[in-house]
Length: 287
Image 1 (spheres, one colour):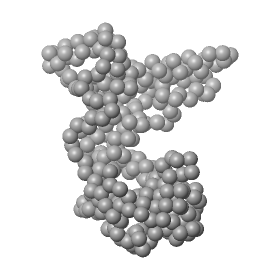
Image 2 (tube, one colour):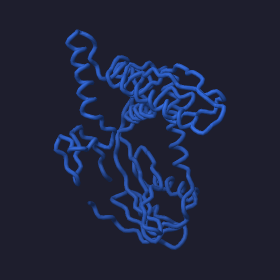
Image 3 (cartoon, helix red, strand yellow):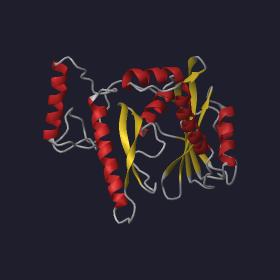
Image 4 (cartoon, helix red, strand yellow):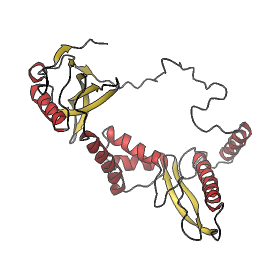
């Protein structure tokens, strides 16, 4: 069994290293603004701070919210231009105002329209009121054990976005539905090698946070690729928990393996895979 720890220290890339500064021309994988644009934005922010105005980066009046709004507005205009290019009789038909809640704050934009109503923007899809980044923040906070009310309060305090409890619940319910689909997806009937192990993680159980066993099964398919076959949270590790896990694997289509490796999993020897030829179960080396 492996203890799962989540240190708060800074994580460094063991291969690329971390020096605290970006290399020249390296924008960290994101959009890099020209230096003159950055200087102008920094000057405006400093001037606002000297004049006693709000100098926040995020929130309704934050610098990042304004930048995102301008970029989205320009992107929507470019999308409409590309859509109208080559179309006869179709042209611009005004715009509709909407507020897009993002992870850095609410952004107010004017979504352009075309005359025949065929324009479907990709940057800000129709009926979209939240960015994917904000949804990711909500799911991340929920996974860390925060309640729906605490998530709504945190987003309001940090980004200035007012979310109802029902909205937060819809986002988390959508993520849970995706997890359930993944947990019950069909499996291949044969994996040459299967590794099983368990982690001890803190899991919210009602009003309390308790240590629970997170049982894992990883299979190596015939092409040599690793596949996570299943993840099960149980009160403890033992033969009963592994029996339930193996039964679910069989119900999802798995039938046999050539070898299985376990790292100190109680009850695994008595619940080793049964279907097909008897596999060879051996202890896995700790790395």
